[in-house]
Amino acid sequence: MAELNELFFRLYEITFLVNREDPEVGEEKALELMAKYFETGLKRAYDDMGFRKGDAREFARIVGARDRSVGLDVRFPVVTKDKIVYQFHDDPFPGLKGEVEPEKLDATYMAFKVRYLLGDDWGYTTTKHIWKDGHTEHVIEKKA
Image (cartoon, rainbow, N blue to C red; front, side):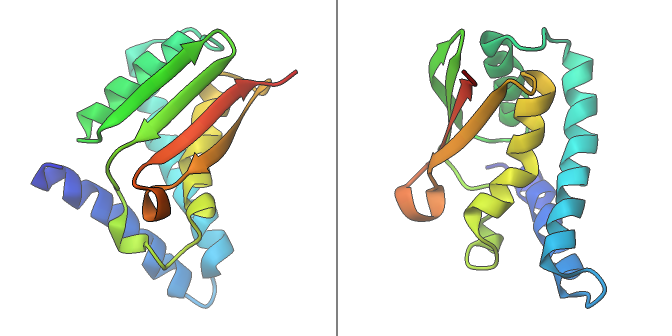
C-alpha cells in the first residue's frame, strides 16, 4: 500500500480508537460513527462514478475501482447475476487487529456497500478474514 493510503486508513483506525476510549461513546457507538464516516465518503465516491443499482457486475466495477484507487488489492473471483465473491488480499486496518472483532469492523463498510449498490434484497456473509485466514472474503448473494 502506498504511504498516502496507509495514512488514509490509519486515520480511520485512530478515529475508532479515540471514539471507543471516550466514556461517553464506547465501542458500539464508535462502530456506528465509523459506519457513518464510511457511508458519507463512499456514497459520494460511488455517486460520482455512476452505477446501476442491483447489478452485480456494477458492484464489482464500482467497488473494485474505488478500493484500488486507495491502494487495496481486491478481487472478484465470482460475479454472477445473484452472487459476488469479494476478496481483500491486504489489510487496510492492521492497527485494529485485536482491538475489535473483525465482523463488527467489516460491517461498518460492508452493510452500506451492499445496501447502497445492490439493494435490500441482497445480503453478505464473511467467510474468511485476513486476521486469521490470509485474506478477507465476503460472499454477497441475492436473497431468495
